Image (cartoon, rainbow, N blue to C red; front, top):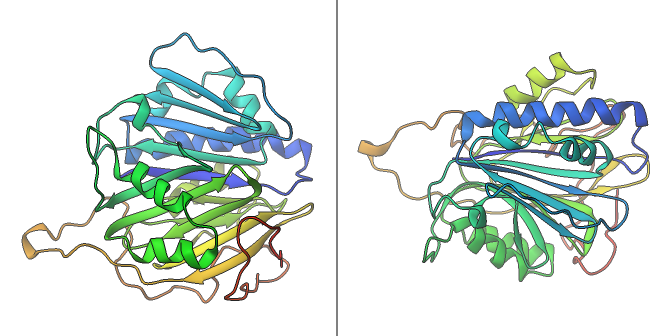
Length: 306
């Protein structure tokens, strides 16, 4: 299992909240160590192209791609990431932040396998364990994001997710569409969302992390809502709010579980597909977000934000 966390903010996110949100993201990284200490990483999206940075620590990797910066490290999140002044500044200025802590289940414990992973147009994070044709120390996560990278529509993306066998919660972006964030939950692996007082949307593998965060920082997060199994959300960062661009249900399939191995994972949600709410996402305080039409747009053209 691994830990996912992150946020997507409106374009006009208040300046006075940025430093608070940066500290909150670092605290989420600390909390996410409960779900993995083999490696950790953060990817951030910025308003303009970034200058590549050099890193002399062999346990840390900096990767700059246009407006994106990915920093990954071997070991626990707290070992290399929170003390970096650059990381804190990146988290304060970013419009999108993807965080990950890894508990290695497939593949070697190397920087190449540390997340967030880059696969073509995709930068992504994955919690779970799916059946995949891995080899030479590669991971199921890398294979999965390469499959998603080939998709051009919401329907095709849902088809890839339907074909998975195993546990998966996912948060990813496309570098060609920096205004969008994709969240998906297949079988078993938990994922929850909440919104802050400025309209920023947060996600985490454990809803308790978001509840704790609200007690530590002046974010006024809404009550975290677990995502339903078999749900794909596409979020759009608009000028004043984060909106739901597309919502799709798909069939989630876990691997068969024998009675001998029927053991609950720490922090895992119940495998029941029954929703705890009729809303697919933690909404803003003004009104629930309606679902997008089934024929939601492809990724090559602007979505219809609603």
